[in-house]
Image (cartoon, rainbow, N blue to C red):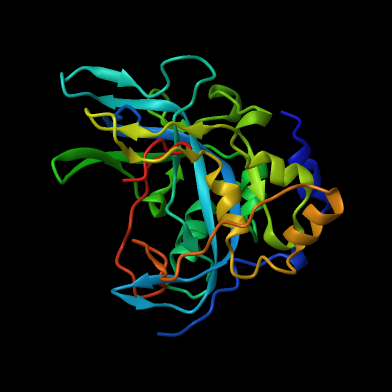
Length: 289
């Protein structure tokens, strides 16, 4: 795969990026994946700028946030019928899973550091997440299922990424033994080092149609699918940011989303006191329940 984003990563000076090896001490609707083990490649690393979130009803100081995304390229599990089911049903169509939006922190107990250390278990020892996107390592990741409010969901612990081992040979899979990702699968956005190509990689065109009840009343208005770019535009440090300057230089049109008067409660992101949190199956989501 020859990716323009990878070429831009090559031009970056690692010393200008946050070195995740330097830790700080201190106190859509989608099908349910069967329980099993997935083989994944890291496909997305997106920085959103600074946001205010709450934890336990308390607003936390604004902090940079990011998200990791993975394409499932192999593996499988046992479905409800007790039958084996591969995760990849069609060549080139890879289920996509991601972390929740996560606070960027180098605290030794931070979720960001745990994610990074998990990624660094395989391949070269990197100092930043984008280097692992570029490296395209193969990881194994357990897939489990939970029931919440009467619905079943997949759950993942992205701190549990491990070397992907071929059960037939008991050796690590080689790169050629698993499908490779294409340019369309890669999403990279660096807040302080953004480029038009990075911005384009996280754009999602179209909108979700309005939802109506049986009487035809709108219960949920139509909304844009472009939630990744919109979150960047809603960052509290967007004004004067490299992103704003880039968009202005490009003559690109943009609309800053209306900011909520109260911070949104989020399930992860208060670091380091948060309990262990797992990701869920996500694509550009079709519902915001």
